[in-house]
Image (cartoon, rainbow, N blue to C red; front, side, top):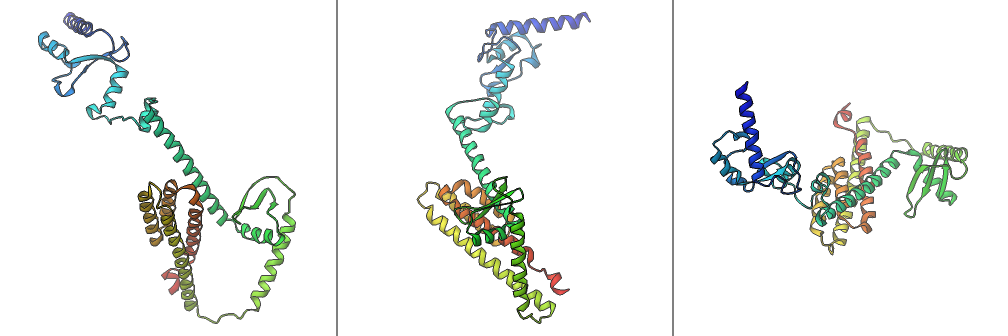
Length: 316
């Protein structure tokens, strides 16, 4: 027990001696707490001071002279900044540097500003696509558009939902209590139109086709419609490419448009939407209305694709 106490006291005194030799405080912040021996040039390091405090004093002194003193937080920051010991290097002009280290240099602040703009743009595109998907899933919206056009109005309230026709002639809706509820009048109008359309439909001659032929006819029809809309969407991509030729980031825009076109040709609608979001961050806002048309086209193609009979149903 006495020997252990002796060696512990010897190690403590040695450490204090070397700390005093190097100035007794952190080279960065001047702190005197929890000091570490940090090698100035890690490639010249032969061993860790803390692990070899019992080495011969002359050997230890030679290694100590290669070091500076740093407190634990500053030592950790320096290790990460320089990517020592396999730690990821923290660079200026990165979000990691701005958020984790609180760096407010010009490069880090600029990167954070760009990140906030990207988030805002992504939120706008997500909202735009969300509105389109919501509209496509709302069967009432199509009737509301007809109703408003026939009455030459721009707004109607049905229950707790307000429907409006915007400047582009598109229907949009949201929750609200403006104006009187016209649910009853609207429902009556829709019922009359549905009855009239059914009456007209009943007057049409019914096709006499076997089920297999009927399925094949449907399949060809839906495929034709999908290909037609796809061609229009691809044409819009070419228009965007032409309009953005003067932009400094045209090469990136072109690559993004090609990627989006490939997803459309493969009929991978989920990836196409993701690619559309990425493209919207590159394309100037004055051309976003073209991206909006492409988004609507994707929604419509997805809807039509779901209606195409598969091979199993065709043979049943």
